[in-house]
Image (cartoon, rainbow, N blue to C red; front, side, top):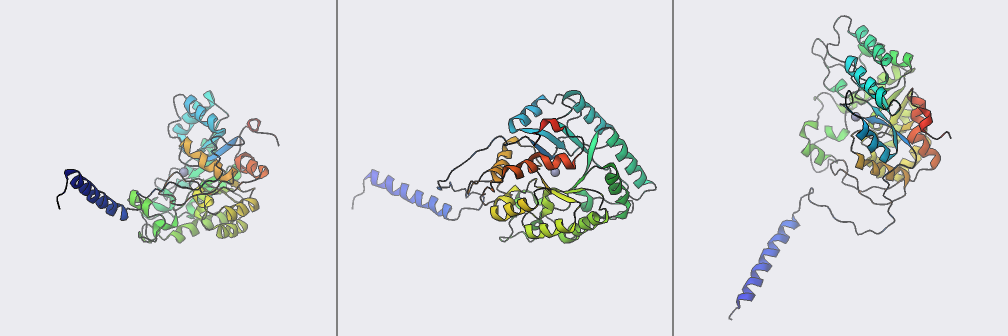
Amino acid sequence: MYRSLLQTIVAFAFIAQSAHCQTTDKMGFEEYEPTSTLVVPEHHITKAKYPFIDVHNHQWNMGSGSLDGLVKDMDNLNLKVMVNLSGGNGGSLKRMADNVKSQYPNRFIIFANIDFDRVGAPGWTEKAVKQLEEDVHNGANGLKVFKNLGFSVKDVNGKRVTVDDPRLDAIWEKCGELKIPVLIHTADPAPFWEPMDEHNERWLELKTHPERKRSATNPAPWETLIEEQHRMFKKHPHTTFIAAHFGWYANNLSKLDSLLTDMPNVVVEFGAVIAEIGRQPKAAKAFFTKYQDRIMFGKDSWVPEEYQTYFRVLETEDEYFPYHKKYHAFWRMYGMGLTDDILKKIYYKNALLIIPNIDKSLFPSD
Ligand SMILES: [Zn+2]
């Protein structure tokens, strides 16, 4: 049979297309982003229903310069008070506190950080306690402990300083005495310790951030680090601890429930774990109802557009909506539809009780 040129072109086009189909048959997990065909009510909330306090934020450059842009972004979200956990200590903390005081004295709260250099050197503990007192005098209203404690902080002998190291006891006690909370991040999500294979829920995060991979010897098993933290909490019952990221138990709320029952001096914030809450709206709503006095709003990374995912999970009963980072969550989310009474506690009332010196006049009186 004689084939026309047109037929030949069509035949080639068909072959080319089927070759393309073959590659899409083998599409990778990272490429697969189906558009949802589900039609349900959607509420895109760009501003929180009530003014709120974000207790987990990081601003490293607040020591100088204008804060106008930052405050404008905060206003758009209804974020009245930002808690900057990266206050440092000494002169840099004072510069930050002074800069805030001269521009927006009631819009920021600063937490100090401990300098863990040379733990175990003569007089180290006394010096750290004294520095903390000075930082609080200079305007700090809390202490933030980063995950380097437990991971990488070494003493003068090169030994890992555990989270419950007795050389740190006087610091936690001082926070109780000064009535400032300690917000502490220990370890990381447990899947970082699991084999990086097709069963690991954080496979994509480990692929894109290989330095986050951990093991039983790098530096210790996940359970060991978490247990160190809990022992420390229990040893200092007169100090209020804010377990960052729901203490990495947002994916096991019955466990977190038993821990909070066991440790009345511990409260939690949900920075970076809203995807865990959003995949179990029924269990999470029950948890938020039971612990409505011990949960605070936290976000962690400062990306203003991402706050709407948080508002949507807290405020709406929307179904099957996307999260903003596939490497945290490849699943979709559901809203809890919290009551106004609970929302107000999460958004500002609990933080007003736990963190000193927040200007109450910025929030509704009821
Ligand atoms: Zn953080």
